[in-house]
Length: 431
Image 1 (cartoon, rainbow, N blue to C red):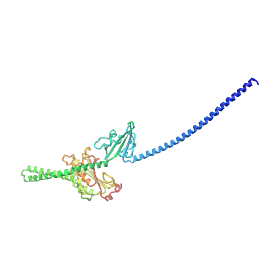
Image 2 (tube, one colour):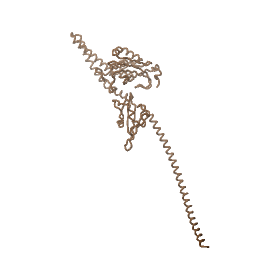
Image 3 (cartoon, rainbow, N blue to C red):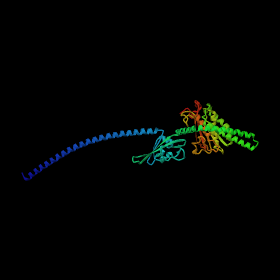
Image 4 (cartoon, one colour):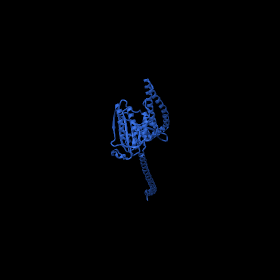
């Protein structure tokens, strides 16, 4: 064997050993890789199962969140209280149906606009000041007038823990009925405290007035001097004028007991208008009367109603010293209105004039006793009117007449069964 062949054999043996070693290492590496891959597959499967579980949890949480959101929105939409929400810049992001109804502004029109848009037609109840959102945000409820509705508005800012402002919430309540009841309670309290005092004073004044009138009558009869008789006549007229005022005062302070009979409101109105026609014509006042098609029949004291209607007619005439238009209208309804029980039939009688109107600051005072803007007025006429309406279980409000001037609205309950005579299109008997 040659040397070359020996070397070749040695090289082959070495190569075989190296190849065997490499193959063995490759086999071990492959086994380790397979084990690692299997471990990785197990981990992946575990992670996949965990992700699926988390995904299910997220889906469940999302469904629960949507249900909670739907539940809260349902509650919000069914609230009779209005709720409006704004962002950090006080632009509207959400409002419920009650807020839309109370403010007269839809969410579609308000979204993205300043929340003050909802209250631009509101005025403070006791002044003409507008709603100040900045003030509301730190206030626990001011009352505002929006037409004939009284709104109580609460404002509050929404802050982060760092006290950074992120939004604003405004809550709106219709407190018209509550406002009316509070006014009635205050009025009753005021009348109760004044009634006894006024009655005592009236009786104390009447006694010396009788003596003054008696001596003035004797002076007028026995005096030969015309100037003295004229002075005595003036004293007598002044005493009689004072006596009328005292009679009105006693009528006001005394709790009246009506003589109840079944009457037709149109008949009572017509009687008063016939009585007043000559005076109305002399004052150059145009009378416009519009009666409901059906006859409003109620249980009432006819004489008291005459006094009520006559006072309102005279009040309208005094507001039009240079002439004008006096409109009297009756309408019959069955629904809720101005203090009458819901569903009960009632008649609405309005007296509108085109006179000077009532200043805003006086509107809440005109039914108070002794309050008057007339130079020679006693301030009892409208107070007596209010008492008569109250005795009959009705209510009275004052507002602005569309033609200028004032509009007094009297609401009186109809008698049981009177609704049968009312045309169905008026809604009588329907809720």
